Each structure stands twice: as C-alpha cells, then as structure tokens.
Amino acid sequence: MSVKNFPLTRDQLEKIAENHPTPFYVYDERSIRENAKRLIRAFSVFPSYKEHFAVKALPNPFILKILAEEGLGADCSSYTELLLAEMAGMKREATMFTSNETPAREYETAKKMGAIINLDDFTHIEFLEGSVGLPELVSCRYNPGPLKGGNAIIGNPEEAKYGFTREQIIEGFSLLKKKGVKRFALHTMVASNELNIDYHIETARLLFELAAEIKNKTGVRLEFVNLGGGVGIPYKPEQEAIDWDTLAQEIKKVYDEIIKPAGLDPLGIHTEYGRPITGPYGWLVTRAIHTKNIYRKYIGLDSCMADLMRPALYGAYHHITIPGKENLPFTETYDVVGSLCENNDKFAVRRRLPKIDVGEANGDFVVIHDAGAHGRAMGFNYNGKLRCGELLLRPDGSLLQIRRSETVEDYFATLDFKAFEKF
Ligand SMILES: *Cc1c(COP(=O)(O)O)cnc(C)c1O
Image 1: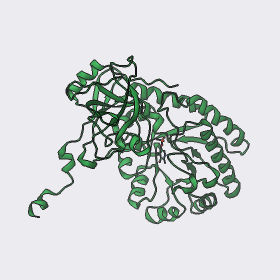
Image 2: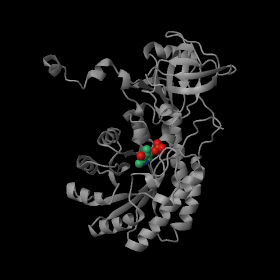
Image 3: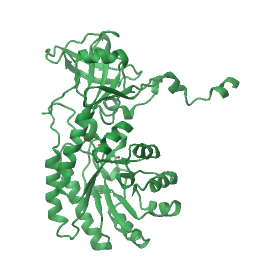
Image 4: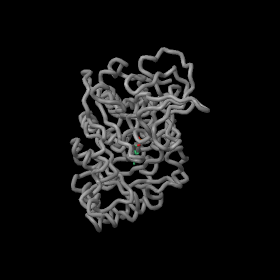
C-alpha cells in the first residue's frame, strides 16, 4: 500500500487559485529533499555513489538546483538539457550525457562542460574522435538484448534501438583503450517504471558480470557502472514503493559476490533515476468545470492531456483526489476528461469517486497525483493548447512560481509575422 497525500487543503487552493488560476503543477520541496537524502544515505554502502537525475523527468532549473544542493547530478540527453544542468550548478562530471543519434554539436557542448559522455553505439567512438576528440573518460551504453526480459514501457531490450551489443562492448573498450582513453565506465538502461526490485538487482548483476568480463578480455578496469533509471513508483494506492535501503543493500550483496573476487573493488555505482526522485512529490491541480451524462458520466476538467500525457499515451493510472471530499463515499463512476479533440484525452476511465461539483469559478478541485515526473515535461501544444505553469511549495509553506503558464504570445512566438504580412 502507498499513501496518496496532497499537501494543500481546499481552502488553501482557493486562495492560491486567486493568483494562479488552475490548472497548475505543484511540487513539494521538502519531500523532494528528504527523498534525495534517503537515496544518498542508502547508497552510501558503496565506495562511491552518484545519482544523475534524469532531467527529462522534470526539466525545471529550480528543481535541479534543489537536487544539486542535495548532492545529485544530472542525466542529460540533449543540448537544452545540458544547459539546464549547467544553470543548476551541476558541474563537470556531475552531469552524464546519455544521448542517441547525437549531433556533433551536442558532444562538443558536453565535452566543453566536462560532462561524462556515454556513447550509444560502437560507431560513435570514431564519430566522437573525429568530431570533437575523445575525452579522458568515456562511458559506453550496453544493450543486453536477449539476456534481459522486457518491460511494458521501454519494451524488449532486443528490440530497443539503444546501446552496444555484448560483442561490441568488449571490442569498444579495447578500441577506446588503444586510442588512449584513460578512464572507462559502463552503462545500461533496460527498464522503465519497474516496481519489481528483483529486476533492478538482476540488472546490477548483469553489469557487474560484464565488468569482470571486460577486465578479463581487454584489461580495462572500469571506474564505475551506471545502473540506469527505471525504478517505478506506486501510481496505484495498492502498489508498494521500492525502498532505497533495501535496493542498495541487495545490490551491495551482488557487488560483494562479484566485484570483490573479480578484483574490481572499489567500483563506483551511479544511477540515473528520474521518476522515483520527483514523481510522487508533484501534482497537477485542475478544476472540474463541466459534467455530462450520456452513455457514461463525465467530469470535464480545465486541463487536458497537453498538460499530462501519460494516461492517454500509456493508459497509465494516476490517482485522483478531491480536496475537501477525502472522506466522502465513492458513490459515482466517472470518466474524468480533458478538453482536447482526442477521445483518449481521459485522466481516468470509469473511476470511482465522490460526487464532484462543477463550475469554472467554484467547482471542485481535482488533484492528479504522481505527476512530478514525466508530467509537465511531456506537454505539447496540439489543438492550440497552452501548457500550464509550475509552483513550488517551499518548506516554510510559501509558494513560489517556478514557471508561468504559457500565453497565446508564446504560442505565436515561432511564427514570422513580418513575413506573413507580406505573404
Ligand atoms: C528516461 C531515462 C532515465 C530515467 O528514467 P526514469 O524511469 O524516469 O527513472 C534514465 N536514463 C535514461 C537513459 C533514460 O532515457
């Protein structure tokens, strides 16, 4: 079981909405900090540990700065994400650059920043060398292919476009060594939103065994392995979160079993969790503005999948609560929907909820939980929809706007109206 809390009351929301009309995201700084501290403490069982927060999950420099203060770095996959990490003060090797189909310009930025470059393919060794030169430290991304079972969001490793094969990774490290690279790291990312702890322990085992094989076959001694992201969160109340202490201790057992006898101790452990770092500590706050009763009962929100795409994209479950009505019986069955002209724009389908009152000025607030990762970040402007803003709930209870909502001017900003006038 996981508890679905929301840190604000209906009265507080009414006050906030006077200045910040719904919809908006709100993130809880205190919980994000406490979670980051728990993570770092748990993984301190390893000789060295670094978490590179997957920037794509919540690309806001305010959040990144909070995480940097807690000792986290960044996992970036594009030029813009590198800029965000730099803005947040995530210096040099605190940032890991894991991209694919990468243009030379992005490698150049990563190299200039001193970020750790993680290569996605064997051919990128020469691409990197030829374009910007090989850095002192190079990491390679491993795709275990048939050696690892699949997972719903990311799919089967064998069908995934990422990484080197096992043969290529051995050859790759030999080649890098021959080319004068001095420091080496190994990376994989094989799952997404996986709540089965064994899956993550087995991923560590796979990488540790490969690290030993690399040492035997090439003489390359890895400095660290990056276990990737993919630790899930309990979107459904009946699901259980993965406990950081248990995860770290179980991986440590495998470390002691494989890494020590292989003569690879001390080996650094890196991760690049996104979802479990901020996911449970962000909410999309909307208001119920319409209801309709046709073949099903609907509640229409002032938001839509342009603000939160996961339910439409993956049929993902996001818990919903109605502030002020937490203790009322669930007497209704609603489809809770957004305003996009797409019928999959549904935050919830046939969800049991208390009776919801509607109205643009005084309707019930509808809070969508676990939206702190891959939420606002996946937003888009289809249908001329303007993405909502983001608020940060500070530890002292105050609220800080960390991103305003988009305006029509933002939407039109990429159009050339001078040219249009003459057209
Ligand atoms: C998306 C991604 C992550 C983070 O995944 P989460 O599920 O948010 O933890 C980490 N590494 C890479 C390479 C990714 O693509």
